[in-house]
Image 1 (cartoon, rainbow, N blue to C red):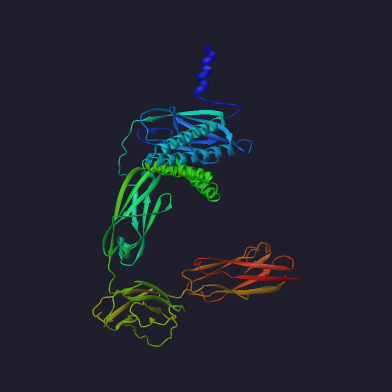
Image 2 (cartoon, rainbow, N blue to C red; image 1 turned 120 degrees about the horizontal axis):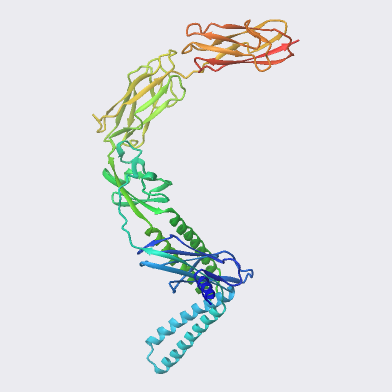
Length: 568
């Protein structure tokens, strides 16, 4: 007897399954433990489906014996969100039934239609004064309620209990979530001193230091305001958010960007988001079914299912928001200044001598002039060519460039093209300044920034020259070729010559067979050709042979190669 009681207790505490050797359902929660006032997301999943296509599994839930509505969010999963929980131990039980899919849908649709009819008759009854009509409406209402009871009985009798399963969880005392400063946030912009000229666009980055979040297994979320108005930073990566700043919309002055960092338990949030995706997909599918039928009972059935899905999805989002813990708030002051009367697109420019395509920058007026405005652009160096036309015509003498803005074209920026011809002198980097003098149209005495111009020598290709590059010889004779550098090296440079993998019997400049040779060029004799003499010390097969040349010292030189054809 005692043994039977023990089995009975185990049977009721764990689960029972009829006609199945393995568990049919899996129960899980978004967290293993909850605190007072939190809402729990309870998820029940089916591990299999009935073999009969017209049959389905149906799940009913209860929490501490109180009925708890389960909303199906996919073909194999249902969910429930509890009310805010009080302290204590909770037992969540799910019973799985098998039922006829088509019959259950028909009965549930009839139940919904009966509910609609009951509401209609109740409204009529509440406003009726004729005793005979009141009697008829009362009888009709009773019949409808009887029909509702009968339909519920049919639905219940058509279900076969397959499995009952439960899990328990604890609700512990509420703890206070503190706003703690952790220095996890770094706010920055891509503008100097976080200052925008009105009209400029920039990027504000909110970087999160994962190591300063105060825990592991967390995900971050950023909310932000700019000038007191909510903005929505874009999540670029797990620990980086960015906001695009349009200074024209802000106006001149100081504007506070305030970012607030929240964290959530990543695993818990992930399970809820997964449920949101499933529920959202099912809602779309159900809406398609509703729109594809003209059956009023089925339309009611689908509308009820859609309403249940909307309610559970709203609850999911509420719990997701409940999981947030405030970590840190940080602000950054953005400054927007009005543009100067005249602005230029760059203040630094680098030009290489002799380049056919000139560099350019633009000049723009920011205020409407009262008349023509002239901008005289000039350089202290006479070989700097300034033009408003990218197709430059060279002149022996370079004159300043004059640009004219009128009351008609003042809104259009004008370009200044800058070119420096090659002076055939290695003079290294040179620096000069391009200046701007403005006059007329109410722009007298307006200051315009200079452009710092850096001029570099032409980039030349330095080569090791081998002449000739092809040598034909007999095995019993001596041949030769010469090596020279195309430009002066920056240091003494050695050209090491190898005879290739198959040229082991070649002798270069009287050296060891297959050992190659080396030529040294100094900064003084780099332009004097040096001769490489080729002979053999033994029989070699007639063939093509390839001599390689390696550079040591000034390695900016491109080595040459020599092909040797050896005849009998």
